[in-house]
Length: 109
Image (cartoon, rainbow, N blue to C red; front, side, top):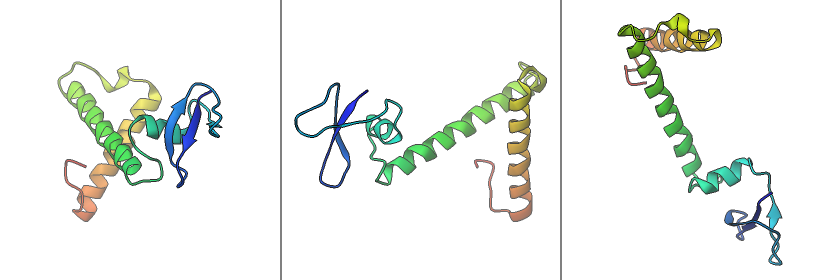
């Protein structure tokens, strides 16, 4: 388990492989705050939100890629697992509803 050192505000400032005399704290290897630190963001700052939004943008890229592969006939929707099919259909439906009913959502959302 990794050990971390924190600053006066409680933010992680260092990761150690063993306890330190300086008062390190043991965290689970999959701890969210540790993950954010490793990605260069503090979970207590606005940058964590930016990382999550970037993930949402990447998810949209993947959705667009899947849609393109289906349109080109390289993949059939039915080739995907049932759970993936349902998720893609639901997200596409929600996007169309938002775009059609409110006019607030463009094709990039």
